[in-house]
Amino acid sequence: MASNRTVYAISAVIVATATMYGICHRKQRAQQLSDEESYARALSLLGAAPMMAQADHVHDLRRAWFVAWHRKLFGDKGPKIIHVAGTNGKGTTCNLLRNALVGLGYNVGLFSSPHLHSPCERIQVGVQSVPWRTLAALTERHALDMQPWMVPFDRFLVVALAHFASIQCDYIVLETGIGGLYDSTNYVEQPVACVITSISFDHCGLLGHTIAEIARQKAGIIKPSCEVAVTSMKQNPLALSELQAAATVAGVTLQQAEPSMRPQFSLSPLDAENAGLAEATLEGLGMNIASLDLSAPYRWPGRFEEMKVNGQVTLAPFLAAEEIQGFV
Image 1 (cartoon, rainbow, N blue to C red):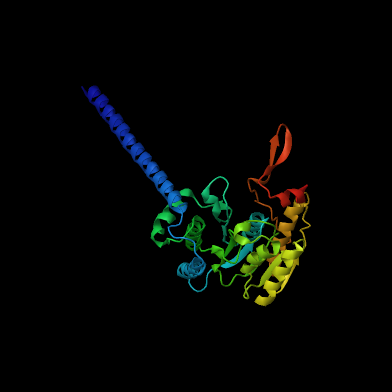
Image 2: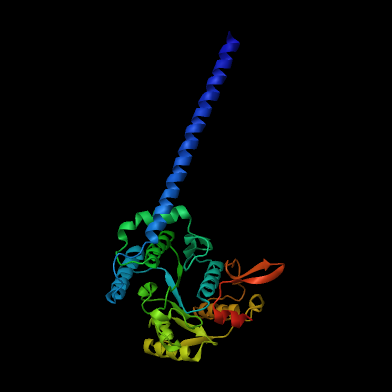
């Protein structure tokens, strides 16, 4: 009799355990589905078209709104901002700047676009993309802050700044989207550094049909308050003239950076040029980077990514025509 009771007791425990496991599993699955649905809703909101026409006055409205948003998040004394514009090499230069600052022990936020694999890549702290659950939560939290005139780039910027504020970043490396003068990121009033990478033809319908017109737009990020304004020694002469004119108006000295002499960039003139920009910027800010490996932990899929095709090593094809010519 006692033996039967023991068997019944054990059976009851097994059934109860299995039931509890089933309940927990269903709850976890429901939570996972809920998280995934939240992420899908977030991406839908972030990627939605603006509900208001992009008239000229929207530029001023956008800038004023982001100035106020930045102050709301960071107060009067926020992180130091390195602002990067250009046609070619913006992403690489931003990554190298971020790597160096992380190597120096700073807490660094990086806002960059476009993404290759996941929208989360656009918002990074340190060398990590924002977790997708965090992106979903931030988007939901700030959905009501987003304005009818905002394009997807604006909405990602809203969420990025909120994330950087919550992490309490020391530096933000901010990459422009299109141009510079009227770009959403150009709300920044006091960047510590303004970096202009190689300029060539891009977004001509928006920026202009000559190198000079395009350079004038890129030069719009140069501010009187910046400690360092730098471009490449190999900058297009027509573009360089416009950049120098903008720097003169701002009352700052435009530095022309030599390509980096570091061995890890020796195989690619373009990488050496971008690394030179990063080095000049950081040294101009008084940082000792001699012992830093700027490329570690640098890996940017789709940009100078080695791939094997039919047994031969080639490069990922996401390059502008000028970049391919420069590399070859």
